[in-house]
Length: 223
Image 1 (cartoon, rainbow, N blue to C red):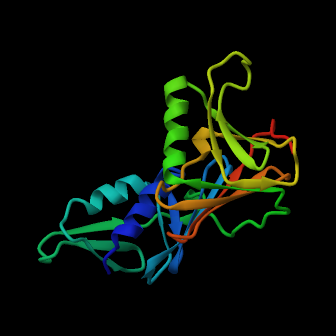
Image 2: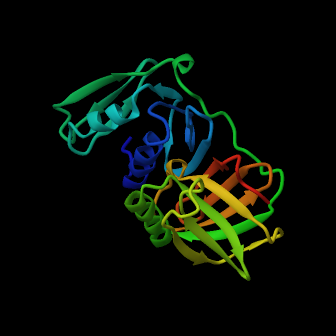
């Protein structure tokens, strides 16, 4: 089988969440960060014929780049990666699930207390602002009928800040939800609908790529 460009992009994104992965038979990929603060799921356009574990996902993706048009043949203990001519082959062995951080199921939000939209341009601006100002958090607050995303240092009231308004609603006028920027390891294509729960969990859904993330909120969040 060949992995599509989109599947490779999802795997590359997931490698940024966790260096290892357990891939289940079928067309759904899941991963979870070591800290359990980020869970991700994507329905892809290829079907894996078997379940297997990869201890170093970045290495696995780099190994596939050693051959042109990599074709994968799966056996019980390893996968053989061949080039388009069949002259070059790489035998890559699976890792035991016991050595991996396995994402077994999705999460269901206990409640939806607020929501907002997040497009790729806004996400890029937030990350650029955080990098430029040296901040690590983004705040989500209600400003009239709009939701405002603010990058600032929450421990310093005189710190520089960056605001951007997005579409959204909240049942809580004093909403102040806080994300760690490092947890926003999202595929930066398409638009997200982000739902927030007062139980300190959020759900990012990118309907254009069938990819979703569950991200923990900072404990300083208020509803």
